[in-house]
Length: 393
Image 1 (cartoon, helix red, strand yellow):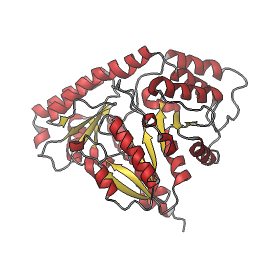
Image 2 (tube, helix red, strand yellow):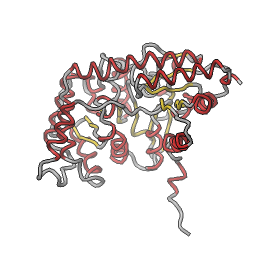
Image 3 (cartoon, helix red, strand yellow):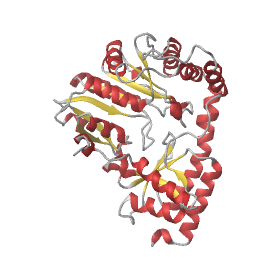
Image 4 (cartoon, rainbow, N blue to C red):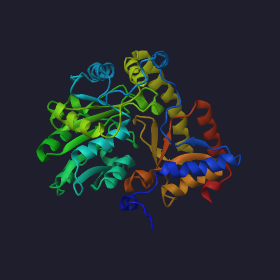
């Protein structure tokens, strides 16, 4: 009898993979669901980025395998990116590594640093892939709780009280997803000190620093951070390139060499045209980021706040990123009770916070990755649902 590997018993199908099947069926039945659930930018990359992709793809000598370590052009661009936006110096040859998206980086870093049975610190609430990939690879997940009362920053007293003897890796993510909590220099300083004290690799996932945010920070700005820290950045969010699968990893040369050893045994490099187009995107003018990542999302954010208001949810007006995180009213047993009502009564798909961990049980998340017209229509549907009082029945 053929059976699946036991590791599959440790995880479930990704929530969005499962739920989008239901939404697709509803759409097939003519119900026209508006999705405000997934953080997939709906706008295109810059024109120069697309032009470069097309130009290089037409060249006859660009279709072979590419070096796993990435092209020199892309590595140089990543180094320039960190210097330009964060004033962090990185050696393009040894301290950066292009990725096929940050999710791939989570896999490679875990394989490079964590043995089966080792422990990994994962934020609660936090990105579900930190948990699922750790479990698949045989690591033991240890959650550290984040709370609104502490602006969703780590509680270092609670961390110090834990048994950290088996912890090899700590995942952190600021600006935070799903809550939108801002990155704080003080938090980064404490994380670096914590990692050094306990010989823990701190991995900061930093894809949202350009979305509704002008105070851009990197953990690598902290003196000595490269000794124990790794940072991911993703072009999916900041440069409107989610389907392109381009990310970046920055850290010290030794860590990069270990990650590359894993990566070189898994993939054969990204298509050259995508790499050179990504290098062009990294050099976008400041005005492009202002228009694409600030003004557009700011307009949508106002509509999302109106939806939260209609639903009776509370939220942080100072949060950043491409989502709005709201606490549900006390009358609901849990967040999914509310999101299911919205999906089936208003035909609007909103994410329940429980998928990000137990600390998200009483929260919902609205994505800003939909056109203003669609978000306004979603608002009207939710208002109509409220007016018919089905939301309270």
